[in-house]
Each structure stands twice: as structure tokens, then as C-alpha cells.
Length: 286
Image 1: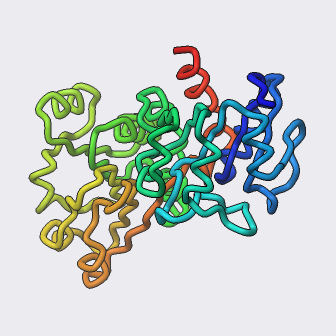
Image 2 (image 1 turned 120 degrees about the vertical axis):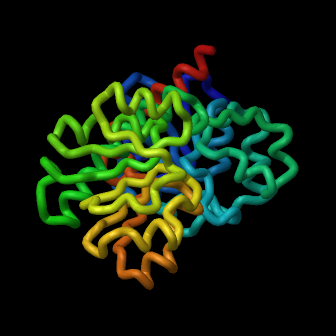
């Protein structure tokens, strides 16, 4: 028998563990599946998928829901959770929330009968998630360079949510911040905030950066652009696949590239879990 005061959380990383704990702290009953290798969480019960579906009207899936299109993203599951008609069948009749939900649809035609809600595409999720992403990127830059960023010439490629937050944090640390964008409106805002504006199309020839933070999910750091950089420049690629760097060219030129994906779940899972919870609560209220 389902309970409207119960949430089911299936699969995920440290973010979903923190999410489960946070929802339980709000007074709801939380059932999980796919966390048999994780430490137990107060107020949270690990059950089989059948029981979770029986007890919960609302099911939360991870972000991303899958990395390979075959299994659910469930690093704490010892067996793995295949994505097929069997799995999708348990979701029919539920309100299902997940990140990058479109990746699920090719795995079963039954998803057409499921109330699917993608929290990853929500603007408030993206904006709030930019903070732990930016902090994580800065931590990586300082660790890898073994130096402070104060006074260093850095480039932020892209002026979306992450680019905005990251530029602001870097300037607050005293870095010499350059920011690239394509739109004239963005370039104007970049200048107003006291950064050095660079048109993304003109990155070739720009050099002497200690660190480059890429947020653009398209290959803008081509062999031509990379050829103008010093081998001392470190590139931290925050963009989702295919990323923003020609990795083969970077390797040949000896330019180090650090691919830093899903940083919120790695550097700040507690906050990342709260962000997911708040976003889902807002979606449910609507």
C-alpha cells in the first residue's frame, strides 16, 4: 500500500544519501534501493525495489540517471540495477524525479506511461548547483598548481551559471580574471563586473594564463587555440561531454587537462543533496 508521506530513492551517489537523510529529517519516511554498500542512514530503510514501489508514490532517481544507457547510476549497489522493462514497470503510476531523464526513455517503452520530471533542467537547480561546482573547481586549481590564485591570470571560458559564479569567486580572491563569451550582452556584463572580456571566437592567441576553467560543452579549445598556450597552463574542464578541449591535441602539446565532472557530488554532497531536495519540493508544489 502506497503512502503519500513516503519517498523512494533509487540509486545515486553521496548526493542521494544526503538527500535521503535530509528528507527523513523533514519527517517523511524514506525508502532506498541500490545502497546496500553504503552505511545505514537514520530514518531511512533500504529495501528491495518491489517493496519500494509498493510503498512510495514518489520516486527519486539520481543525476545523471545513467552513464552508459544500460544500468542506473548506482555506485553503492553491489549488484547493479539494469534499465529495462522490469525496472520501468515499477515506475508506472509513480511521480518520478531524476536528472537527465531523457537518457532513460530508450531503455523501455513503458517510460511513456510514467510521470517523469527532470530536476536537472530546472533553472533554480542549475543556479544553486553552480556554487559547489565553482568552489570545487577552485579547490582543484589550488591543489594542482600548489599555489594561491591571488594575483594570477585566469580565464573562465563561458558565462553561464557556473561561469558567473566562478568569475565572481575568483575576483573576490584577488585573481586577474578574464572571461570569454559569444554574446555582446554577456561581454558587456563581463566588463561591467570588472573582468577582462574575451570573445570566445578570439581565444586563439590569448595566452599566459595560469589556469583556464572551461564551462562550455563544445570543443572551443582546439589544437589552434591550445598551440598558443604555455605547457605551464592548467585547464580544468567542467563541461559535460564532449567537454571543451581537444584532448588529443592537449596531450601532444603537453598541456595538462583535468576533467572535473559532477563536482557537487564529490566536494559538497550534503549541500548538493539539499539542492536536489529543494528543487523537487518546488516542483511538487507547482
